[in-house]
Image 1: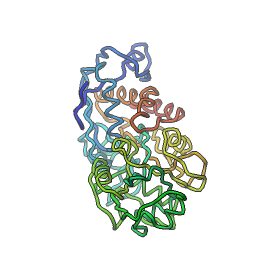
Image 2 (image 1 turned 90 degrees about the vertical axis):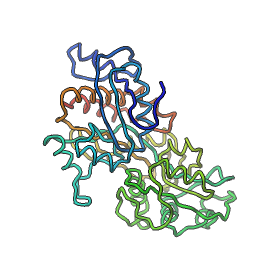
Image 3 (image 1 turned 180 degrees about the vertical axis):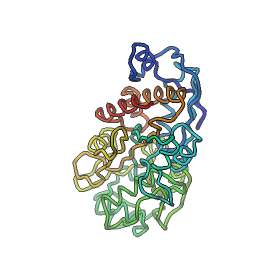
Image 4 (image 1 turned 30 degrees about the horizontal axis):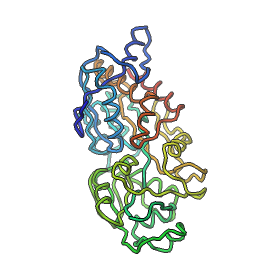
Length: 367
């Protein structure tokens, strides 16, 4: 099935959801191996996070042939834009790399605006895609690079400006580092990836990174590029370039990926090391609002600390019955363990089992 690059993708929604409903259960769980017509029809529209673009496209593609009557459109415009479109009732769900804000940002409390959009019902943050953030670089001849939170912060703040700086060399004994200028690339659009990367820097190196994390990049050095595609292209075409970017984009563009040493030893970015960070996260929401609090300063060996979770922002109630049925079925298929495991090959980490269980229960509770 050939897919366009961005939106208007035909969705295959989980057949097992209807099978269970027919048996008298409201549980929309089931395996991604289901096939055949589901009887579902209609269109579901989502917008937001570019971090989950590759994941959600694969999820839609995997199930497309089984549900030819359903179309899921997902427009990867960035987390900030997605939340705004959701709150304006322009889309049925939003993808955001940060949960809805509960404090005013530019005069808007996202959680309150989302509640109003949902007819006075709560909006829920449902974790769906685990997207490790790579510190990606272009440095020919340097296949292995180790960075600490402090050195990373100083690079992105512009106080470390060359690749052979003594602070970098000290972390990489025996590595021949060139004197090449460091060229920083950052997201010019509002981005949950930007906010999560800043949360990591502030959490792991607060004396170096003092800016309040937000979806906008606060740095004074470097070059802004729109969306993840833009920053990836910038680094790929610039020797000495560095950026923060979702693992899947770093892999797609064959960029170098730094190992991170938070104090417990250098950790390579893998699906397993990133998933461990999510497994250790603490609940930050209540009930079926499944926002998570990550420990960015962890020194636990083998845990990759720079991760983000893309949440699907949904109404707990408030959509019409037809949209609700499509939403529950699609999200069930996306959260299914088989689907989650299939995302590893394109640069994502699967949701840990305990979180998958909670997500399934929350999806089932949407009404």
